[in-house]
Amino acid sequence: MKISIYGAGNQKFYMDTLKLHEKQGGEPPFNGGAMAIEFAKAGHDVVLSESDRSIMSEDLWKKIEESGVNVVNEDIVAAEHGGMHILTRPFSENTIKSIKEILLENIPKDSTIAITDSTPIIMIYSNVERELRLKRKDVGLISMCPNAIPGSKLYSRYIMGYKSLDGDEYATEDQFNKFIDLIKSTGREVSIKPIDIIPLMAGLPVHLTTVTLSGVLNYYKMKHVATGNSEKTSEREILYILQGLSSILETSGIRGLLKALDIESFIENAEASKLLDEQKDLESAIYVLSNLTGEFTEEIGESEIKPVSIVASQALVEEVRKTIGGSAADGMISRCKKKFLA
Figure 1: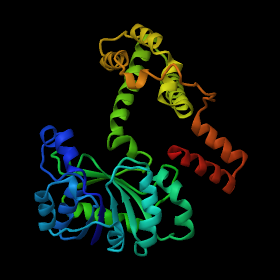
Figure 2: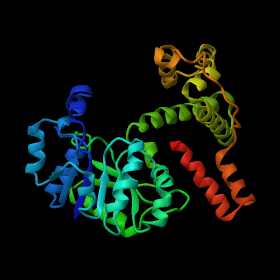
Figure 3: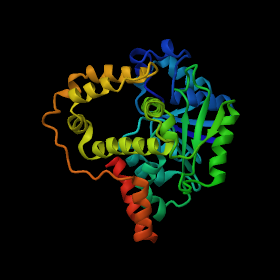
């Protein structure tokens, strides 16, 4: 297989700042460099595009090149190489620009672009939809997130997907299966999930999901013990809380959310909700909120709490489909998806 990887990974950051080799084991290069070596050793024709050679020592570059990887410094060379393209760079506005101006203009017919960070494929698709529909209907998008940073000892499998929870497909089955075959050729495991779910369980966002899910489950347990409420009642309360937080965050940002909650009063109320010995997650959360750093607190007073309508989002989607229907409803929903990157 002809594989193109974009981004070798900043090894100085991984080793000097994160000290990844000390915390999680393994050896450099990490991330894109490690993936390139792994795929090359599995017998694939690998091109690694990296314009900044200073991100790692020459010894590490030599290690990559001696494994059989062809290192280039221009993305267009990698784009023309073959049909399987793996983006390992941290997501930014430049990611969309690179996909539009370099990849979609130069990759071969029926190519597939794999995103390895936790950025939702739906968000990326919404911002390149015009180009894909009008120029490159043949190109597929898939999610291919490693469970840990490649090269570390925790790295063992990929969480992959090309279908969404609402049934949309962002690549063909054949395009997706080629990447499954690629991963399995290295001896790594594959876990297939809907692309909407992958950002919740991969990369740095899994921290947020873990803490949130722990809070949800402990709240349900506490609520059941204290009041005997039904599961449905507890689910509705949880839904409102999460929807309320996300709605205020969407309109007013993090500082607006903190201002709306009035952190000092919020912490007092949280202290009063400690009813079970098992609520260790609540104690940890109170500690974090009680020790907010200046970067969060300095501008809270000047923050604006903007008007917001807290509604059940999926119920609203269903109402839009029923009331408007057809392509008009689909267009409205698509435009709303783009707002995640606005």
